[in-house]
Image (cartoon, rainbow, N blue to C red; front, side, top):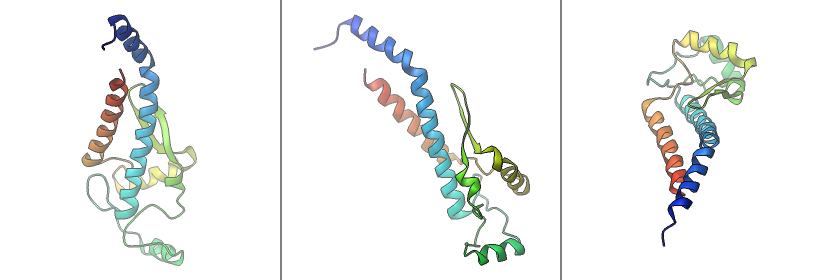
Length: 146
């Protein structure tokens, strides 16, 4: 049995009224997913979003990392782990979310971006497609409950 039209209208109106809060939750979730995706790629491969490897560690940093038992095959920006640990949501609007390092790590992150001449926290095309699919799934689930 189908719902009467007034029930459909009320349900739809309610969903639209709750939509901004829903979008906020979805954006926050996918932002944290994006951060995890980027971190995994960079830490595991040392490759930027454009597919190029980051510059090798200097001889000094290579020795320092070896002393600490850290890998030296590729740059992973994980010496103290504070940049990754303190990266999260730094801005959100109704249509977008920005991830970045916490204020105490911004200077270190910017130094690395300037030195590498590439944004470390960018997503590649495949990663963007994954995030878009996650958003699409959540929106379909939300409106599918009508």
